[in-house]
Length: 105
Image (tube, rainbow, N blue to C red):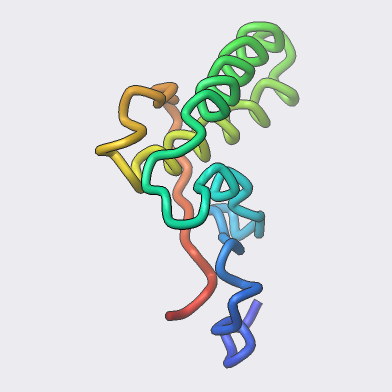
């Protein structure tokens, strides 16, 4: 995707790209309620617990397991954005994927 004037629009604010150049929506951003810095910690904890469970469940199926490794890296990336709130909710994924926001401020 070419970064154009359109990517400055608010609807692009949750659009990210990973190091494999795949685009995705930063859906965890939805746990941040309007104006609250550290809301919905229960939801983030559920997300973490689900990923950990699925990483274990699909350990013997590499094609599926790799997808949950990606999600675990995304989860940790999100937590790293607000370490004062979310550092205790990180999974500690070993393979590091990089992510960058598409929208230009």
